[in-house]
Length: 165
View 1 (tube, rainbow, N blue to C red):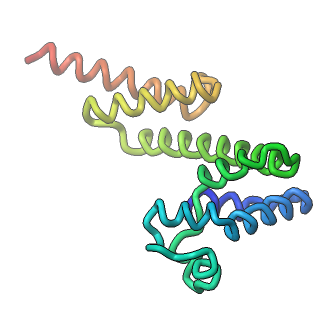
View 2 (cartoon, one colour):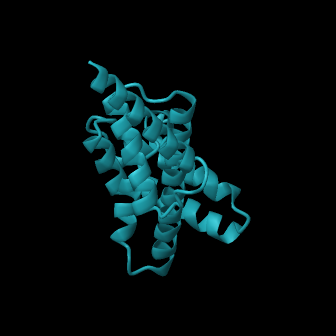
């Protein structure tokens, strides 16, 4: 399931039905647009189909539901419409939450299976920097504090091994 499909699912589950209806209307409009067909062609999901052929295809959603970024670019082209701006803001909020979930899940995975080489330690360190600098997560909260301790202990362990050789 890609992010546009997840966004549609999260919109359907929203308490505020007006926002959900608005988002779903704009997604449906996107899927009926010529820009959608061009995006499908760019992604090489359909060869040289026309808008009518894509609309008539029963496997259209199975082949490709859409990409959140392409949908956002399409919404930006309609930025003079307040509804489009509202849906664009909703996609940005959704995207931010997805990044937060990804970072937390990735860091949790490293706590279950600690990094055992420099590349993995560097990747975990980069995840922590993004979590702190870009998203503003407090590093003294879980799971970040455990991940920092893990990095320190693994650095000390590898320094001791390097010094012994």
